[in-house]
Structure formats: C-alpha cells, structure tokens
Length: 75
Image (cartoon, rainbow, N blue to C red; front, side):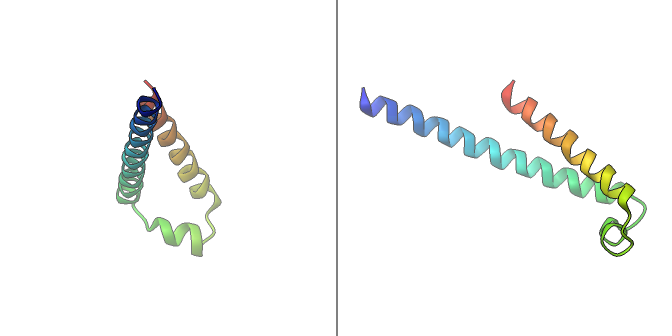
C-alpha cells in the first residue's frame, strides 16, 4: 500500500508541474500578444512615462488570463 500511495503522489506532482509549465507558457504567450497588438511600446509607457492607466489595463489582462488558465486546469 505504501508504494502505491507514493506512486499516486508522484503522478499528482508530475501533473501539477506540467499544468504549471503549460499555464506559464500560455501566460507568456498572452503577454507577447498583448505587447504585439498595442500600437506603442508597453515597457516605455509603464516604466518611463508612468502610465498608470496602462498598468491597470495590463494587470486586468493578467488577472483575466490567470482565471482562464485556472478554469482550464480545474475543469
């Protein structure tokens, strides 16, 4: 029984790692798409020009993408 429990835990751990890597890949791809569709340099607008509105929009995008990834993983 002990070996079976360890194997099940290893399977769950492996699944968690795979889902985490897939989620991070989707997140990074989403950020690149976001930067690609914007008609200006996102990095310059947020860091140099201190554009708070763009920071809020980008944060909302990140939260929305995280909700989508979490729903895809759980369901």
